[in-house]
Image (cartoon, rainbow, N blue to C red; front, side, top):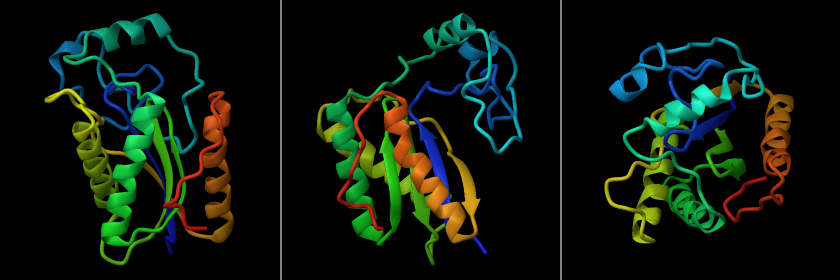
Length: 185
């Protein structure tokens, strides 16, 4: 039985549907991206972020987006955390780990009796977006990519491994460790 999920959700423009390393998308819906190729689906459960690919091609695709791709500042990450905290309090979610990185977020979220993890992520994104808009995010500029990537965790070892992975992510990106008041150990 699923007891938690490790979720990753991306800032707008971080991981494109036709990323040469693969994606969870099966269609490229944005006309401006279609010239860079069809959707590149992957079914692996392991990260493909380090796979070799044409970095220049990926950069060109990002430049072709309708809006500039999003990369959060430290101040924006703090604002996002306040939005997350609001959603977590509103619906009593149990978040075991969270890393807010410049272009994506990792979380380990306990199973919730009334909501799917996809709905929880939507709620978190919504409250974070509201917090950013209140702090002068440009109106009409997207914040998040659609959907999320998720791995269902069905035993305590998997949960602890995912927590460790999430907690190490800022360090891998040469950023300080993150501690958030909404984390439930």
